[in-house]
Length: 99
Image (cartoon, rainbow, N blue to C red; front, side):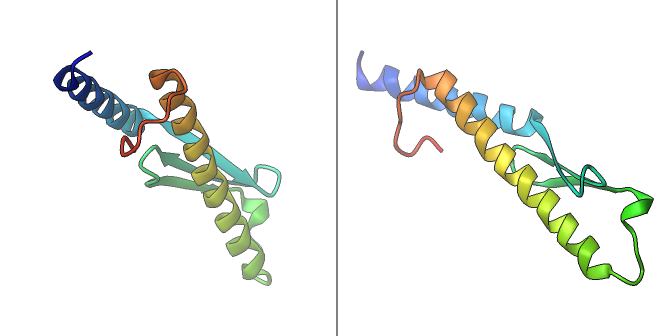
């Protein structure tokens, strides 16, 4: 395969991955599902859902910790999903600089 063809394929893969990142939705939860964070593949936080039972005016620190944990779990899931998708696209081959 010539280098120009290879670069064109890499560019196509980048476009596909960017679209997949935009379309991807993951959810991180904490507190047994009382707090949920939804994130896209660009790690943009799209929403947070908090059950009423998680809201205790006397323990705001716990709620803050639950939100942080849910967001961190969502970010970890984005990383895992993007690695899985990238691996599927490249056949497991690591391409430096692709992402």
